[in-house]
Amino acid sequence: METYFSGMNVILFDNPTIRQNLLPFTFTRPVGDIRVGILTIAEKWQRYLHTQPSFSTEVYLSKKYPVRIESDNVWINGAVCPDASFVKAIEELGSGDAIMSNQMILAVRTPDDEVPEIITGKIIDYKNSLSLIDQVWKIYQNNGAQIRADFKLITEGRKSELLSDPHTRVYGSDNIFIEEGAQVRAAVLNAENGPIYLGKNSFVNEGAIIRGPFALCEESHVNMGAKVRGDTTVGPFSKIGGEVSNSVIFGYSNKAHDGFLGNSVIGEWCNIGADTNTSNLKNNYENIKLWNYGKGGFVDTGLMFCGLMFGDHSKCGINMMFNSGTVVGVSASLFGSGYPRTFIPSFAWGGAAGFSTFQFSKAMETARKVMERRSITISEIDLDILSAIYAQSAIYRVWEKK
Image 1 (cartoon, rainbow, N blue to C red):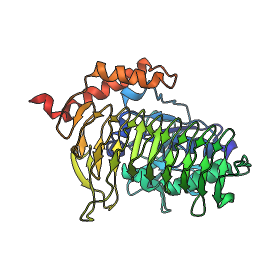
Image 2 (cartoon, rainbow, N blue to C red):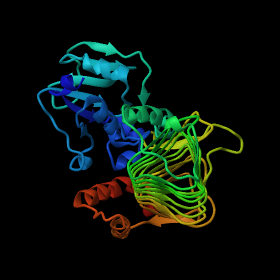
Image 3 (cartoon, one colour):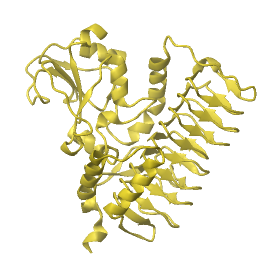
Image 4 (spheres, rainbow, N blue to C red):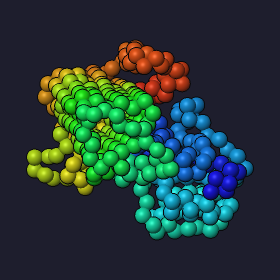
């Protein structure tokens, strides 16, 4: 497979409808840069195809995520999580051929500099099951299965570091993989129902109880006394505490204190205040409805369990309460008592008592301080991206029009 793809250029493209469905997370990244399981979708493709994909995305994101066009391109829908069957189908594509499902292009091989409107070669109707991240709730819904798949992909043929702490209790030790520099102190690791992956230089503190499938990525921490149920991913350079269940934290974010987070997705550079709780189940057990940017309204998820969708750079203060199915945009600053509305636009400032606008200059001051704590300087490219989001999201800040 590596030889075959050595001359082929892989591009992950944003399907416009899917990109809209995945907002607010795709405000700040292409679809293919979403983390689900241990890896981002792009990182999965990189490992399967032994080549670095580029991205075809919105113009305002393209400086940070540039596309690379060559004479032989395989355009892959960025929402597709690869597996052996789909990779084999891509391997068999001839020039002009496409793989489709339900009239949606999943992949096409072409010398063109964009996804062609008309397929000139053979069309393969893909019938096998496929993990397609085309709604925000599918990030956490598919997370357990993707942790299992990524765990196999990352650890196959490798040997785990030893777990040396005598006070840590382990169940299912064959299903635990520890990278170099990871440390565990007086914790409980139960991998009987799914793998546990501890990334490079990660740390599981005293009294933490973790049940797999679980992924703790590079330099991240599980704080003292945390209770972590399965199907949860903590992306790189993040901290979690309290009770966490079936949630995905993309990276560089903290939910360091007590409080419940369930069936939720948290972006990058976020902070969840102490004793904040998310509801993931309605009192009447009805399906949860979620704000959808493409529709401009709420859609029925078909799910009984759905918590908080929290966009990049957003923060909330202590003792916040979020209703089931709450969507928060980018760079929102939330605080106060009571339940805020279940759709909170980007650059909102306030809570249940009402909102004003988190002015761009003030929001960027906060972003700079947060990133500097991780020894990262916010780039002009990132500032331009956030400025574009500020302008795009003005339509949702209805209080500005009063």
